[in-house]
Image (tube, rainbow over the protein chains, first blue to last red):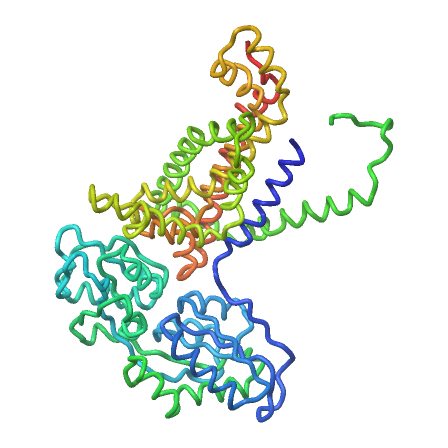
Length: 262
Length: 273
């Protein structure tokens, strides 16, 4: 009996450990050296909406820099900003809005001023078979429609709140998901009739979801800033990564993914 | 178990030292958490309607899950402990799987089964228009799924540990198997049952991954305390700390109450006439 209790408690520990929510286990190898010939791991933290673009840019970056591994961690911008201010080892941070980046700037976490490198706007997505027969944004008000948005602490949630207020939609969402990818997956799975995601996520998920435009306006636009971090272990590589993203190659990749110009 | 004094000699340092490390290791993060809490905000937060909503939801759903777990878990534990049937070890393995499943995976699995496009969920939706995700019922389902294994393993262990001959004696005295279960096996397994209830409830109360994946996250219907803590953590560290402490205090209070009221009683006098 007691052995079993011990075993149970052990299992509990294991289960709870596994339960730990995502985050970066990033670890900077070695310490900062000269800027031109750095090798090792570059840790990049980026908003979830940058997943596809940054993943492909990382491959290019690694090809151009033998001996360098780019380690990417994607999460909600707020979570990443929090991790940076708490001292998570990272070299570059890219967030999905300026307000979130500002919290890191205020905490003295960035090296120099952040640069804007892209814009994004919200789009509505519905499952391919469109079970609730949604044709336009105002259809969210139809009775029984289950739509999901980001929680309002995430940039996509702040944007959604602004857009919903500006367009006068009164219907409440069925759920406030933790980040934009969670919203997309609820729609992809067909659990939600509609979701508000970034235009880029609508592109990324276009096998399973159908985009429906939301009137673009000043309320419906986020700017993405990127910055090398003050505590970067690889300051040289961090700067090169920022240059790649803000340069022609990065801008092309971002445009292909549906991002707007900064 | 309660023997002490010189008869056994001094407790060896090679046991005491690691035991001390373990105790400190467990206590330290909790102390650190308490030390960082902005106590000035504590009362304000405690009376915040959104927090009370989350707390109420957490208590209701975890207790509802516990009721479901008891009703279906005790019979399953009894069958595993007392009935020989082919495939029993397979069933026991299945009971353990959710224990080792990362909670988010459990959430995805639940969506695959009970979501609107799920194995069971799709026919349910087509026939009756019922959907589980985004409802409070879905939170109970998620809680039940993750806490049932703890409960079943604990109760099964207790049933196995009790002497099966009592069952036989009861049978020779003319008791039906149901009566034997109710009057003999279950009371004897009392401590294990309570341990299972406590473990299961604690697991349900802290459940986050499966809930947010399967049930979603909306104030009042699916935003439980752990969900609220996660959301708060993204904007307001202090609020998240206060919430964490509230959840911790509630758990400790309930566990303390259980210990006082029922646990000792059950351990001391498990067999009732």
